[in-house]
Length: 307
Image (cartoon, rainbow, N blue to C red):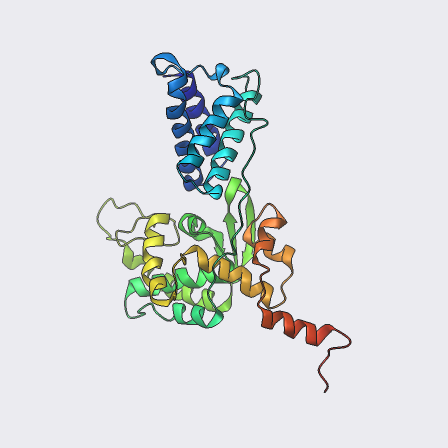
């Protein structure tokens, strides 16, 4: 195994130990393996000597990506991956000098997250067929996602003891193994209670079957994976989304947008979403023109509506 591949393997293991999501780890590993493949041309027999990687090699890699019409958003992510990797290598004495220290991260336009209207959310919640156990389960999943703004992976990983139906709270272990406690709304609580009444129907009850403690189960009584959850939700979302670009994550965007549009404090929303930086949450402050007019007319001394 080459020095580069060994370092990548060690780095990925470190990310896993820090609780990064499987999706993030997969993206980081893919970016670094792509870099390794590109660097092969600079070293004989493909034996990449990590201490001999220079900033010029990395810049050449970024130019190569750019020439292949990669978007600035993609270039930015890959540059960030490379910088984080070599920072790790420097701290762990794998390299003496960080070749990525002055590598520039391309700027890109941040698009406003797509979100559903409140009417569309109501329509979405009413799609599951509650005469089937799958419909009852899926209704509970949808209501919890919108009620608490959870990530898909957080819902998939949620265990029975993490939700307190009487206190209407859920304890989430999010990115970086950070814990947060989030309120759960009345409608979500009702839907989850209904699901809990039929949850045992997802087990086969065969001798030797191991009953897992995950809140949401697949048809075979196993934990639902994030990919399975996305597939389930996509079938509902396609019936509501009027344009392209909507995904299960749009439900989380809707949670944040609707809270802020109705006067919630930005830092409170940040806490519920589990964002490390307030700037990430600020992306959701895209109030509509009508919202802004309404606030202006109610608050500005010269524009208040007459009684």
